[in-house]
Image 1 (cartoon, rainbow, N blue to C red):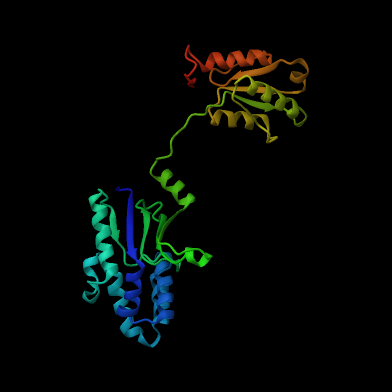
Image 2 (image 1 turned 90 degrees about the vertical axis):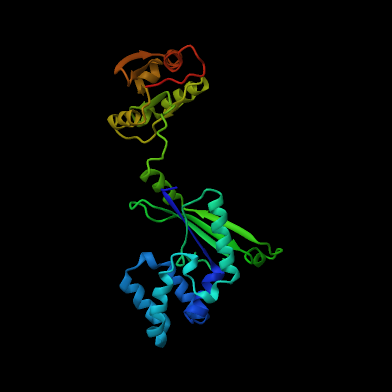
Length: 287
């Protein structure tokens, strides 16, 4: 849990704070919510400038209230006149339920807006605590009216959306990506564009015999193809040229032991399976 922070708020509470605490009308409230949603993406000076524009002639009274609101770090810091509001009750209940479930990294965040307008209740986001990726990984919330806009019976709904890129960065930053070994047996290297068809035929033949074969179709230089096989930790490279296609004998290089031999397709199958198994049909070979 120390890797993540669950930030929680309630859109009904946000509406109350905008109208009752900041004294903004509907247009001003919408603009302020969008500004708060961007708060961590713009400078403090730019945030203040835009807030002054939203408050207009009431900026002298509004800015101190906005600063006070942003400083509310717990539900207990909310204005006393909102203590009995249904949205506050829901927040307290959710936070209590999370603690009962052993989730200790959930916090109330009064600035959490979830920019989309269709949210009607609880909203949440999960943030990566790492300074290298301090951003929302995914989030969502309650929306009661959205489904009804599509001509069906309105139902209360909770949804969540995930950022694929941010999740990948989270896994990378915290070293959580599994280091899976390659299960490919042979890397087939066409030595020329003309030998690609023959190399493809060999790949299909080997696959039919249960050999896991990868065919390089990039047309890049041979040394780069070999480097690709080494990077993927594939144990064998098979070189396919016009001579090999004509004779049916292919150069097979053991990339682990750095030796070569020239053999037919049937022998490649045997070499691979001898390497892959050690008396147990389910034991995958190791480099």
